[in-house]
Length: 249
Image (tube, rainbow, N blue to C red; front, side, top):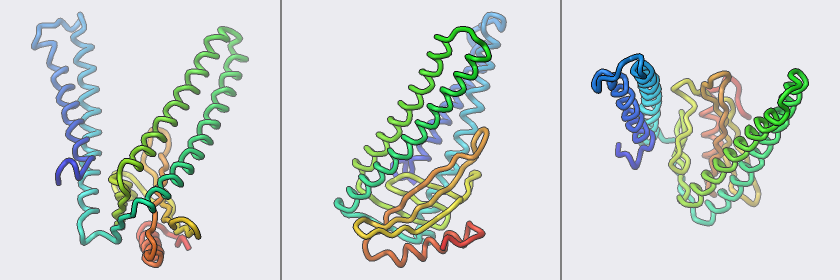
């Protein structure tokens, strides 16, 4: 599959390049005659770390690329929907509204927790209140900026690309973005069909992936074009039967 049709494959090869740079850094001190105690050991250790990160990440993206290729094969597709500009515009605006609301709630929660932790730390230490305040302010600012940039990028992506959804049993490609709930440690948490009177109905899919301390949770909301409601309900039931112990209905 070509790079433009499989973004994870392109990303995987980028990380292969990062791994190669790390391997080069491991042997660079001996190649240029840099003594280990003059920074050679540190450079080699850094190169080893970069090489390992590149290897692990490239393997993950290669597996995602393979999953994407498997999903987009005709025999694995449950539905392939394309949306009119008007339909996709309505979905994009609704998705942006939901996304902003969710990110706002998460930002407020992080900000409150940061303030509480900062106050507790200041009570315990009773020193350097300005530094503690600046650290808390920095955490809140970084969290807010990250949330805003991510939301803006998602909104821009949906406005730039006309909507398309390829739904399979193990994942969905929604507007050229892969959501996978089987493989690389991912699992399906819930799936529901949600009907609307004045807007496109949707299949709401929540899945999780391994994280450092806990699992990361994501939600993909797949719009359903007019006339495909019964098929969407069947797809919801089929995916739930394949990946969940309990029916979503």
